Amino acid sequence: MHLDSGQEKLLRGEGGEAKQFAMEIVTKVGDAVGADYLVPIKSAHVLAHFSSLHEAGVDVLEKFADSGGRFAVPTSVDPASIDLQNWRSFGIPEEYARQQFRLCDAYAKLGGMRCWTCVQYQVCNFPKRGEVVAWAESSAVVFANSVLGCRSNKITSGLDISCAVLGLTPSFGMLKDENRAAGMAFKIGSGTPSDLDYRSIGFFVGRNAGSRVPALLGLPTKVGSDQVKHLGAAAAAAGPVTMIHLPGITPGSDSLSDAARGERVEEIEISRSDLQEIESDLNQTTETPDLVALGVPHLSAGELGELAKQLEGRKLKNGIKMYAYTSAQAFDMAERTGITSTIESAGARITHSTDAEISPLKQLGFSVVMTNSAKLAEIVSSEGEVKMRYAPQKAIIEEVTR
Amino acid sequence: MIGKGLIPGKAEGGALVSLKAFTFAHGVDPATGKVTDVRSDVRGSSVKGKVLFYPFGKGSTTASAWFLEAVRLGNYPAAIVTEGVDLSAVIGSVMAKVVYGREIPVVGGVPRDAYSKLETGQRVEVDAASGRVRPLS
Image: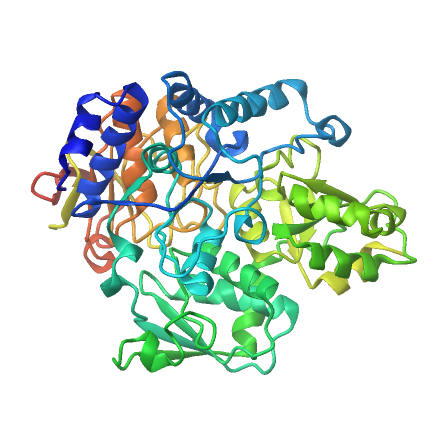
């Protein structure tokens, strides 16, 4: 990889220990993936939650913070493993919280924005078309490339902090025009998708695209940004997808021909039975859930409002908890508009700055979790400890309330 | 088999062969090295000391952090061989080197059709400098 003289100096340690450490990481990764140089980024999004970073990750983040590292660009952060405000009331053990707060402290010292969310693009980090960003959080990367028209690779833990500290990222993969062309297409052949279908369709795309960039044809024009958010999140959870060309939505891809740069590509139709297969794969049991988890990725204020409507006048059955996961900003809005009180009257809770897939569900005593998030169902079932059920939100509410 | 060396180094170990998308995030228990992912075809096997083959990564960008914790606890593979380029494996291996001084070579560009002929447990040698992956018996 070619470095300019300023970058060479950083690698030699002339910009301090943290930048040298970061340069060592980005150059090694850049060499591995065949990047030719480093490019400036407009923003970063990093990971700092204990359930994934573990003690190794706490060591790394503290090393950056304590050796003088400071973020060089606006940087947002994925949810924490605990509700940062009300963690005690959710039964989080003290020691677990202590480890998460070590990460919070190191992140704050590095100068990051304190918006702990996986939907930063709906809340606090708004890149515009064509900009290069270095984002962790696979679902947000799909949204960035497919909807916002900016450019990001799926920056995984370790590289994320390095890019943020340098304000640079290796130029490869989705940053390059030639890697962004659609290499195949999926076509929705199962009629107008339901809310759950968007997630199952995303999951099917992620599972079957392999390492090709897919296009997805046949989305109704009325599809909402929250639905696209869940579609992309499911795709990224199921496979290596970092971008889906959505003709009519993706900037520069008004048709399949635009998306595929004029090449003819394989088209695969997604049938109703394909979606049923995904649903049955993500349903591991028919047991009654002890937790309903909604909001992976985080629910928007609009989605919280919809949930409140569906819960109005209902009560959760005994022995079942329901948590709606959201950002601090949407949480505040829900409090001010009465949404929170409707949701709480039904016996459910809104929790912010954390998310279900990265919270210690098993340690908290949950054994069967029900959700409408294909991403959550995939991730939690991977661990093989907590069993998952996957169903539409309306059907879930019918089952768990009276 | 010849692939492209992504992270330098030489290693030898028993083959652990997966034909499905793989992730360390929630998919491998760092405390034991065992594959827990219910959708993995090598669930229950340990990655520790193995030459781990899989086509490509999936899921969360946290995979490299899970990988690094497995390294910290000593339960990491000897080498990784993939069909595509799994950025999580690349970054995990870079972090293993810069944080814990462990060398875990990574080779990409080895198609499933080629490596699927290996039997799990068969000894394999990996030389990332030349990209060569060679069964020893």
